[in-house]
Amino acid sequence: MSSPVIELDNVTKVYPLPSGDVTALREISLTIDEGEFVAIMGPSGSGKSTLLNQIGCLDRPTSGNLFLAGKNIREMDDRELTSLRLSSLGYIFQKFNLIPLLTAYENVEYPYIMKHRKNDDTGRVRDLLALVGIDESLSAHKPNELSGGQQQRIAIARALVNDPAILLCDEPTGNLDSQTGAQIMEVLSDLHRKGRTIIMVTHESEIAAYAERTIVIRDGRVA
Ligand SMILES: Nc1ncnc2c1ncn2[C@@H]1O[C@H](COP(=O)(O)OP(=O)(O)O)[C@@H](O)[C@H]1O
Ligand SMILES: [Mg+2]
Image: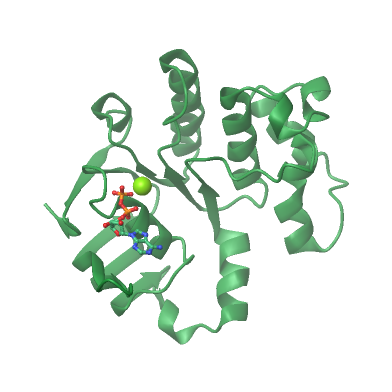
């Protein structure tokens, strides 16, 4: 039996700008069940990243409600939201967002330290780096000494370090060649088989084909 882990009820997001309001999401209602692998597709500027940011609690809806594991995020304060983000949500950004001054290993360990308030003495960081194909010598490199594919693998390992139930990926293969992209998709498919809920933004239908369901967004609405 599946139960909804994510529910959006009439979610609207407006960015107020000096030149006028931009409505990025218009009354979006949708449900995603535990263990689903969902692709979000749509043209550039249609609101895909904005939608993922709402689900990832990086931002709050202007109106409407968002429920995570049945809990309305409007009823959570910043502290509860931060804790939820660290424990339940893993985020893979389109541009990796690795910290340039930290090594690959330290980048992956960072959210672990934020959550546990101590270094990883369990071997988890090393194991995750191995899982995504980054060996020990590469782990000591800074992001700018690594290829785009290697940086994306590190970003995936970082997103997994606190064992999140929900993985959010914004164009996870957007900056990669097709062979590296296919390898990254194998890692994500494997995580899905292991029970993670995966929500992935993409504008490529070959990438969306890895998901079980596709939600199409156009002009901030579910098409
Ligand atoms: N931080 C922001 N401030 C103002 N407008 C934004 C911001 N982020 C996105 N937008 C606008 O919202 C709309 C949707 O953007 P986005 O969610 O990034 O689309 P997509 O990821 O599908 O390309 C666009 O018109 C974009 O310009
Ligand atoms: Mg985007």
